[in-house]
Image 1 (cartoon, rainbow, N blue to C red):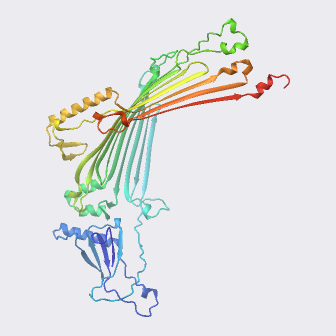
Image 2 (cartoon, rainbow, N blue to C red):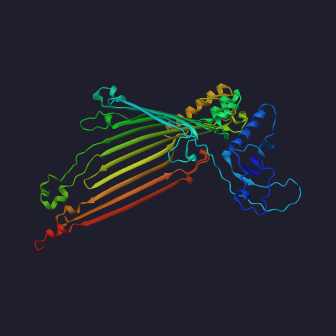
Image 3 (cartoon, one colour):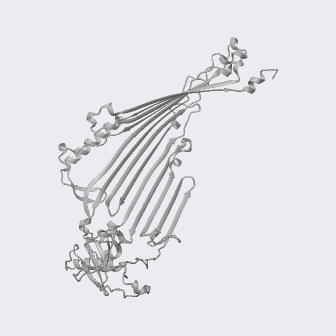
Length: 531
């Protein structure tokens, strides 16, 4: 016999050869020594399983833990448990001694070969459409269909599609700034995207060797829709974004309050997915950016430029000296990222023929983050030779979690699930309302306090071009020096925010000095009339 399945004893298919004959003494032909007695189709195993399952639904109970056998010509086919050709992990070849007597024999086992693969091909189609309305708006859409069996010309059977794939992608961009007067110089690009993809498998994902169309045909009317719904892998995503929104009005002489110095961006993305293992997987992301940048070109104050005492060339070190009373640029940015993910798993029962057990709902899991990042940067050329830049960054977390504790009664389990996150709770509505109100207030309080810091960094850079070349005797020498200082802080692991201590925090400080001197020998040689 030949036994294949997910294990040797409880979930397997078996092909049994009855009345195995001895090879006659002196036989030398290949057909005589290796008779073709193992010849069956995998589809016959699948049909045997479906026959057993139909019999169970018809009221003739067959225990799936017991062997179910059917004649197959002169041989036998057997199924036990819930094996699948799509999940073969074990293979056993053996001989059964049905006589009950002890016998001595020599057994030869030849190779096994598979032939007659399902090589039905598929097809694919791709369509695109797009149009543009001058510099105001544009729209693009792409649709794609790939059916089961589609693949490359040189692809083998395993590389071809095992599902029907349908996808649609759309995107639109509108320059809303064109709706404002041209003198306002408004930049407000709105981008909207939407994508949807659906995969309908060829085989029932709970019975991976049974065609889905056959499984739907045999399913009862009460569960046919449910089976088709949970078998389809679906994903849908929609996003909206306003990027670099600004009013480009600036003064002739740049001022800190010019509208052109300000810009902001906002974005929102939602994504929904579901498959055989997940009832739904919902993700929402929100992002907001605010940026301020002010650059100016201050004039240098040169106190010795017009001094009669320093008119000669040898005093160039002083006449060229100048300092800038104002920084060259200020920048500040505020970035906020919020994400929320909610997953509701589907519990698959041990009996894949009973859909009601496959469709049980387990507890929900979720993950959420609300982070704020603040950055500031200043650049200041104190003099023509001394330049400074200082940058800082702070990352903080907005707390938006409030335990639904005994003050609001115990949080109940979901009694019923409805799509789009509508739930029925065994709880008074006023308790949920009060909890939601307190949650909003605590989140707003944390937001106004700029959150709980968990990372801070700063960097200071100073460069100095030593003006030794301003002295006529040393104009063939250039020298530079620089200093860099870094400081980083990270919050340590906190189990209970109410008992936080700084003992676990990590701080790191680094600094470096660099300098170089260069000699221009050509300039030095030119000072000598002899050379």
